[in-house]
Length: 315
Image 1 (tube, rainbow, N blue to C red):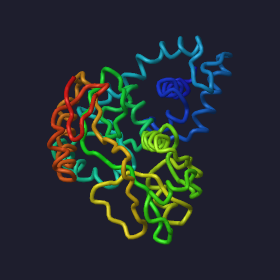
Image 2 (cartoon, rainbow, N blue to C red):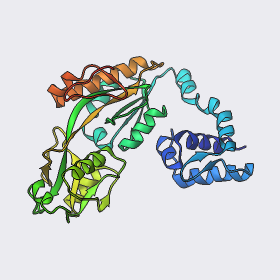
Image 3 (cartoon, rainbow, N blue to C red):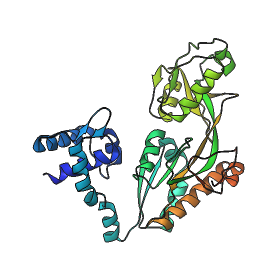
Image 4 (cartoon, rainbow, N blue to C red):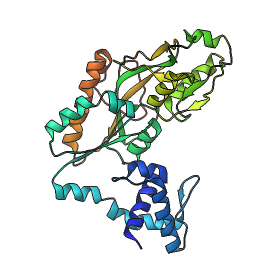
């Protein structure tokens, strides 16, 4: 069996799909290349290793993954040991990395000059899957209601749901839209599995308004770009220290705020000092952006949190 094909199958099986595997690979490779190599492995073995939609390993795939996982699963650990350098796998949205993480990363690099940082820009569902499947060490994400029991999370800051409108748009308030009952304006939003969309649609249902996205994007940054181009109104969250002259922000009174927070594993690992330092730097950055909220959230909370505004607690 071709070792490279086995490695690619390992990542596909661990990530539960080719698309996710592309994002998690430790080196650059395109989705068609992964699919072609895994298909070649299946032809060589004469078996199907996994069902495509929905993803599920076949009995043959499970047996092969069980065989190769001890080797490929320890590659990172062995590399760290040989290099004498720690590694930290960090996941966040593209906007978090772009707008807020530079001071944190600069500080950590000064404290740990030989640290190997792997930064993964993903959407919220992918971030949660990444930390739950042990593909990431720390995640900065909107916090869902339920998490794996082996994870801890803490609230960093609360973000209000908002609508984005171009300067030329005639809409000045959300109330103008709700009067229609069924809104005719084009809505640009993230996918239906995103927490932002779920909370927005839940609240719309409570007030008796129907408004589904006509354009679906995979990042808030793209939504801003298309709103600015005049394609419609965008669903987003209000972000601290964000100033723009291109688009207008329309507040959504009565809609819930979302909690941006840290998610990490309870159990310590070989990089615990690095992880602890990173968490502290993120808390400092959050305190600079929102002193009141961040000061209240110094205690971590375990999975399945019961939040109160501006506070986090340990179960």
